[in-house]
Length: 83
Image (tube, rainbow, N blue to C red; front, side, top):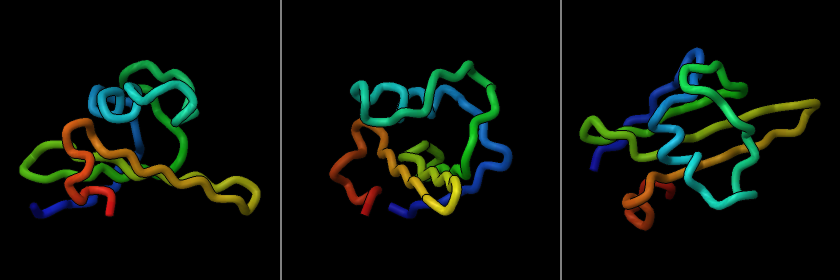
């Protein structure tokens, strides 16, 4: 499995983010509600292998504090994507 980290500039909310992040249990990720195609805050990286989205990395900095998110697609968890 060859993973590629691809910077998204500018980042938009899309169906893959909805599938990977939007389906998480309530309270896990507090990113708010976004319409498809909407610009979203922070720095985003998409993780791909074999042309499919395996997960996302996100970082946001506010007043010297950083928040980092790593989300792995359902069905890909436990396979080394997040390690």
